[in-house]
Image (tube, rainbow, N blue to C red; front, side):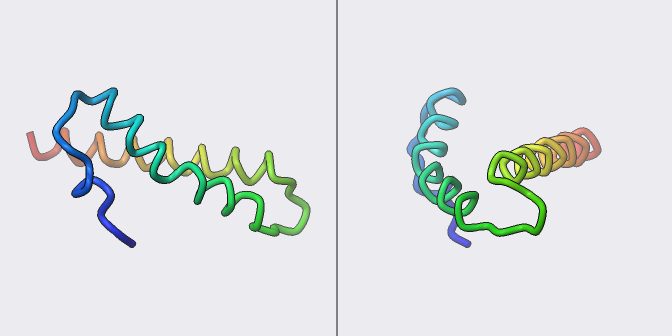
Length: 68
């Protein structure tokens, strides 16, 4: 997996998130469309990805709080 952050210039947080989104959006859409999970439609796959992303953000926040 490539390090996307290393390719993003120094901008404010909102700009960095938008640039990151633009770089990964097409791949995420393709992943959702091509992921075949028995009994799940694409909307459910997308929701599962969103839930996983939320959990990951919470994990990162916990780690950050432990180091500060």
